[in-house]
Length: 582
Image (tube, rainbow, N blue to C red; front, side, top):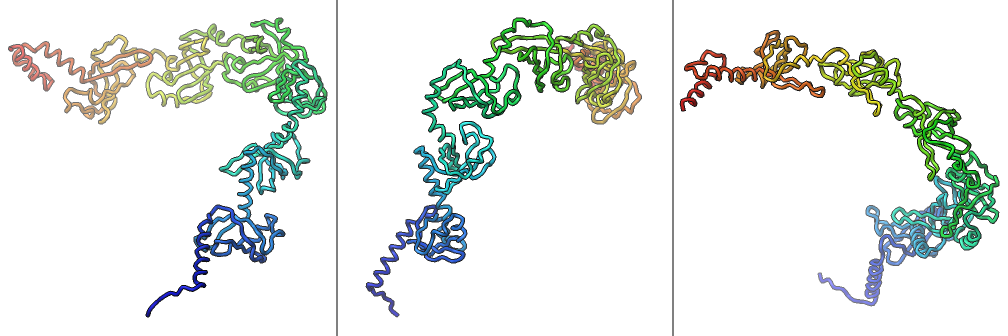
């Protein structure tokens, strides 16, 4: 069979049409906005068509309802959609979105407006955390309006602004997250800035003006002046007395005389003060002297100390370190209450910064000085354990309950493991302590339980020297560790390591002893200082010393040494004889 194709006008026309469709299809890109024509509307779907698409995209009718486009759409209407997928991997359908097309177009538009510093129209939808949510209907976007950018001064209630179409300045765009931040305050200030500057130029520092309290905040009070300007009086400028919140002194609606302390034409700000119109209590500070004791009234308690009033509006600070000689880092709230009258000593007067530092403990006798007068080093006292940690005990005596005597675990027992000895004690146990150190400057007293029991048993070795021979009783033997021995006349136990049992490795076996035997040893190491208290004993050293003594005594006698109890002594004697002959 022969296959052939004939060229006709109809086939040429089809070829041109096919090529045009392919060329148009190549221009279509996912993520771009395309214009489509509505071909059919049903109860559920809107059918679209566009040149270059191989099939009809479909929109859910509910999407058009949400966007408010359903009433505007009819057959043959034009609508812009975002081409999300040219072909769904499973269904093969074309995926488009009218909602995303509106948002993308809106985002592109707002980017352009932001660059050109153009305002945008919107309306406040509702109050949210930190501010409000603003709908920019013309762009299909929702923006965030911070509470500080709603008005020139903070508003407690802005319900009257909700739902009204207003102008907003675009102050921030986050292109990654698609967030928009707008400001109503910028629009208000920009319209008033020229007039406000003229009003501010009429004032100068030091002028007295009258203002009405408009709003109270944690950081100060906003006043409205007679000419309509708003000014802030910071909390620190309300009174010479310490003020935690302006509502302690002021109420909304109060009319007060204010003194202008700064006119800032660049920031268009006016700063005022209430206290500058009051007598300064520091004008009479010279009647107070450092080192003298005065009575004051506590006006505020804090974790770091307390504030007190020497006289009306003259405030001083007592730091927590100045509350007590013996109690460290204690809170003033545990010792005092507001309005308590206490005796204090003035530590420092800083006229430049208008600060006064006071001390409670300087009015009282230092208990560490009294302790040093009552007790001296080496005194043994009755005490009770008041605290305990992983390495020490803390105890106090009946007459000095606020002073804690420090007892390190190394000072609990002369023998045994310090950690194990520490575990035997608990809080409220009665103990006897020997005073080892009294340091008044550092407020530290150190004591020892073992020192109160009697002299250090390590002093048994006080008159003995390294290499001295002593007799010991074998307490126990351990195949791996060695021999545990107790010098006769002492109650301390010492471990002789396996390597220190004998010169001959074959005899260095701890199991040769079962316990109860007497064995002579030599002192290999001695350090009786408080920090170390170290004694090392060795049988091997004693054998070495005895061998050296035998070599010295019998080295010149022929045949000597064969009957001595050292397996290598005869060989050593023979070698020494040959060396002498040479």
